[in-house]
Image (cartoon, rainbow, N blue to C red; front, side):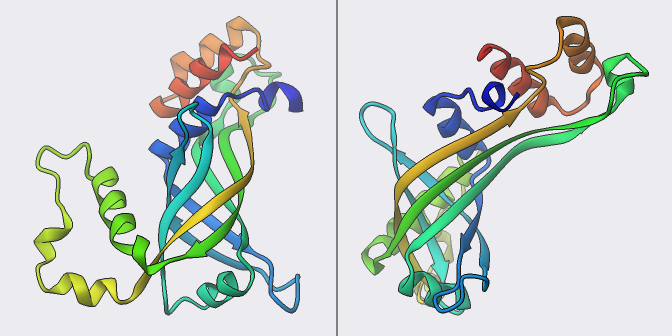
Length: 202
């Protein structure tokens, strides 16, 4: 079912990263490829006029040892995890149905370029993105004089995208009866919404 779970559009990629922007940033060691660095940071996806992903915008703590690794070796993997959850046979309504885990993930390989000129934009945009659903969105101006001190500890960057892949294992292989039973029984609404969405990719 690998092909079935890999049927996605760039709109699916965009929407998953929009709703689940926290990425695991993974780098191999500069002198030893077995020395892996991993950091978690929120990322914003930039797309072109045709809706194709071109880059990721973010910021990075200067005190994180991973910063030096990325400066030396810019190529990194960005893993995004969307909704996921355990699916019990009770949800499927069949005792001889094996339990499983439904999930949606996106993997982006990109080259990281640090630029302090991007720091303000990265901070402003990520805050605006995360605050977008608040009745009275908070913004960086509320920090006053503290902003410059906090800003000095991070560096903005843009990651130019080299490849995009996704795996959306969301019950596309189930028959209609089992699929509807899972939707009716499962309490994870975001997961169910993505199951319905990806059902159309068959």
